[in-house]
Length: 108
Length: 284
Ligand code: SF4
Ligand code: SF4
Image: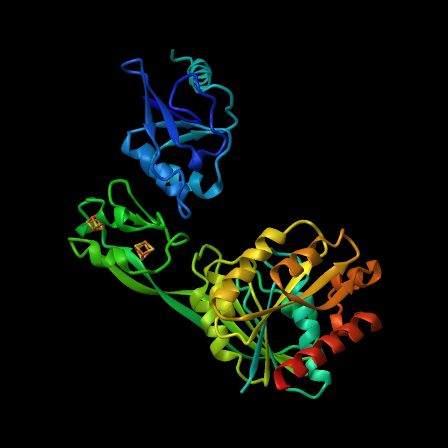
């Protein structure tokens, strides 16, 4: 499983970016390998369609789960089409959000 | 030749529609033929101020949207990379997101498989009605459609019956605004006497001036703020044609849909003098 979190700086200690579509980076955790990576979201400054571009980025990196503070309705629909499960109300440090999620899933 | 007066506010909620309706009615009361065009097609509301509207025509507005033939798409992603509106995503196949698509047609051309074709869909409606002594043409953009341009153009093509065309323009200073004020003889900025919105208004003014359109101003809710907006007008060299003081009772009547020209004697007098000022300016 690959879990992504929008972050405000390219590090796993970074705080989450509250605007999912406008985040410059995504922190991705791969539960198979136990590794973290940071990928850039090229659409973060797009004047149109930042949401779709962000979903595309996630999809390109084979993300299964997105944790975010909040996600707009259009982006939510598109995430569903992309087959990415999205969970809201996460905040704080990116790494902590991922841990919290894994704990809640009981699959650490 | 008809005279086109575009009313715009930079941001929304400045009372622009109220003044557009009021001004249109003031022209009617001077015996002029008037078309009121509601170009705020994402949220048309001028019709709410009329009790006696009789619909005379209703037309659908079509526009072509790109559609991907799934069986021919190889998911190469060229269409997505081309689309600067991010209106295409490619998961297993390309998907066009209509609400972001601006109909540039580019994706159709760049697809190496010829898998994208354009199909006509209904994106909105134009309704013409008569009432209150004038002709009202309203445009409606369907929810989920990104591009109001074709609807705005259709409203402008329909609303040509008057000697005076009063254009209720959309907020902002983007494509919809430009499309709306294009060809206007003058732009009447409706600004509130508050510190908010000065920035948006300045932007709209710059855009209009770049298009070669003269800008004049009506200050609405005068007395509510600190006069900041008057300073902005002075800085920009914009003549203030009228100041509409804020009156609680009038505000409440308008919220109930009372026509602004009948809402109060004071407002009527202001609208009449605004009309006279415009007539004098245009006809010399
Ligand atoms: S027509 Fe233009 S805006 Fe619409 S999806 Fe194709 S490239 Fe994007
Ligand atoms: S360019 Fe054509 S083939 Fe390539 S992803 Fe787009 S629709 Fe599919």
